[in-house]
Image 1: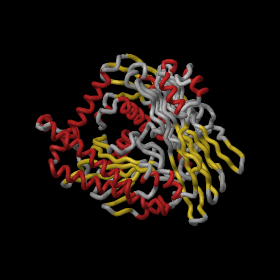
Image 2 (image 1 turned 180 degrees about the vertical axis):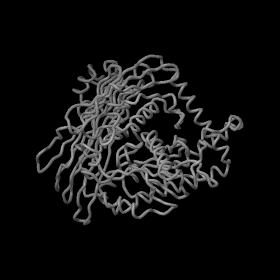
Image 3 (image 1 turned 90 degrees about the horizontal axis):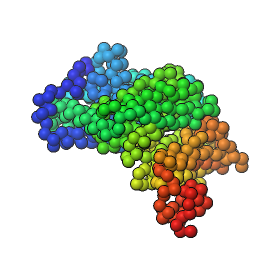
Image 4 (image 1 turned 30 degrees about the vertical axis):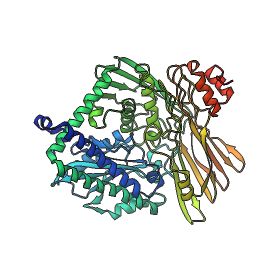
Length: 580
């Protein structure tokens, strides 16, 4: 079948005027529910803990002609909001250029190429045409974080890669399923280039099954209301989201606002990378200019343009959470493409840290720029690192190799009227660290510690939330440890006089000796044996407002709970707790 030339935005004004508010609301929630059910099907069937427990995945519905976002599940990662529409668009372009515009029911494309609307190589996308009565009505797409796609180190998070080939297998958009049948030759190529290949087939089938669930649910929704009504609803949803976002932006005072943030290093050259954000607010639009940022870097902290744009989208969604998510949400956000900087990676620049780390620095720069414009609704910087840790080795007791990938939480920034949340998920998503009990069951490791990192919240009238401490001991065999984290050089910045949160720290005990990564938060191929321990402390959130204005009763409460010692309270807040 040839892809339809009519997009979702083509409903007539008469179609929209015939939509009553109740029907529109039901269809809007119905589309989100379709995505939610895809998310749940994916999670429940996936083999890897990073998906089944950590929920590092997302599902959505996209426009038939240009791949623009129609709906995304509430359980999906926000960073994929923008990138998945870019990768879906890349698939559509591929279909037109390589398949004469023809697709069939049951076809599923696979793609993880970062430069074609992607993130890092471990985020693998499946994209499927959705047919209704013989025509392509929309595209269904999802992303799952695969624990390994080959490359220099187990887990894919190489801290010192200098070209993308060192990070793993790169797949352009290709038909992985043809008319519902998996291409076994493509599968064999994929499995021959990744570690622990026998365990990936469970994730692959789960990812495909989620799209099948979406087909069934979306068909039922259209059967109930009719294709024309659903198209009209989608067009109206997009129009209203744009209108809501413009109304939010209109309340921001016109002007130019600037903010900066830093990446610790690129993992190869031990120098910080700077993001310089200039936001011009005029009328109902925001213009984002990052062209003054650091040039492309040698290591894997370059960001592809799809991730750079998506980071801005998610930052604004954090600020205005009540605006619905679809392509209309992004229309008032204009972005100057930052060519010539590390925020516009081109082949063969390595990019493994772009989605998990650089995107959060971009969002932090947006927050820093707009805090002075809208202090009542903004906040100090959150921990802003996913804390990516990969451990790959061989378990002699189970006679098999393994790869453990985990990410961790940290403190949120304080805000006007409240302290930051402790051990919150990263800025880019709602994914969570898999439970320690699950990790200990799957892998030959033991958590010696998992605790609140007291004292890590930045000082302020409203303090930052706290990060966590964890310590992992290897119980059997040998393993290699790699990490791509951030905020090890400087802590999450405070706002309006607030102090920075605590920095990320890493220490590896090997045979009784302690090793600290030279790049503070990035390293790879650290060999560990039985009894060796990896210790990580994640950042606290930044403080909001003048610390001297903090309520003495709040300081006393924090000291009583052990969040700060009396000495820390004196140092951070400049006064004695009321309880002394």
